[in-house]
Image (cartoon, rainbow over all chains, first blue to last red; front, top):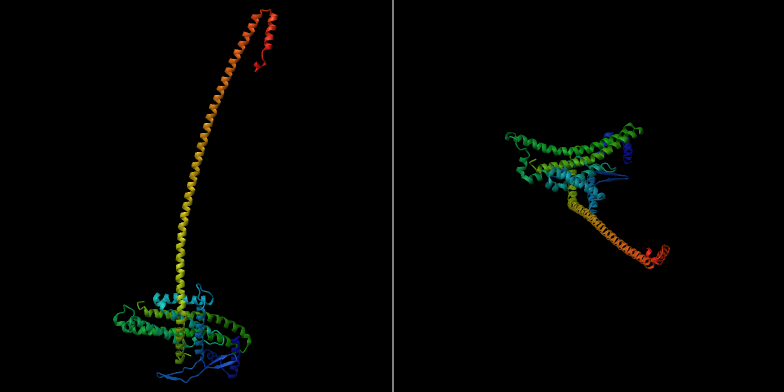
Length: 282
Length: 164
């Protein structure tokens, strides 16, 4: 319904401003300083960029920041709700949350990092999973936008994993030991410098891939979703709408699946990377 | 779209860090502890149940054994009693048969003796009668007709009791 409203409104503006569909889609995916609610255009606070170590940092509260904060609040609320009802046996929302928590603890953390490290990193991984999942799913709710469709957000998340791998790897085997362990054992000494460079590049590539994977998956689905709806405006005919909406609904459910899968993949890969850095022998 | 916005990244970190700290401090710790303690108790309960099951099975086997033993014993007792009863019956039968044979013999002997004594008595009586009759004849010395009447009269005079 809201999508239709959006479509109608966007169609009007598109005709009025001679905007093309591409910019319209881009406008929907990009971060902005406004939050459009029905009958209410929230202008979010805008700050002057501050100079932080020579980089101009714009700390304005943007739409995606609001989404992330809402996601965080939702998770905390969900866990409080689940926690308030801890019984000898799981039930209701608590059962769902507990199921996911146990799943991440056993199948993601302990399976990829071992018993001891798995238990240690379980809170981080659970926060990853729920945070990303909530942000992903919020993109599918009308009026909300997809914070995980912003590459800055996914890059920030991947950097958390990156710093965690470096930090815990160095804590585990010392700075020299950790970077020495990056190169697999049994490499001849003359190949060592080359392998070291390759491994460092691989380390960076892994996290860049982590960034791009989540960002691209969340963005692509939304582009397809809006493109199908945009067909109605391109053809300027309501006869297209059954096809458009049918496909849009299909893509919507696909996105629902992708939201879960990407949250899971991000969590599993983070667990794997951190696990590899704290267990260099693997 | 592919440009990194440092402000957005910083906000992401801040949000993520706050969420993680609040979550792990207030929610995850108790939830994970509760899950672990529940898992432990489930494991314990399962082990207890398994142990109790084994105990119950052992007990059942013992009971079954006792039951079959008792049945065997009962069967044995019944058989023994049957044998004993049979023996006793045979004995009683034998004894009663012997007793009845003895009794029969004794009775027969008595009857024989009685018969003998009755015959002897009869014989003595008859002899007495003959002597009496001869005495009368000799005393009277009468003619034939007269003798006949005398004998008849004598016979008539005999007590009726002798008939049996």
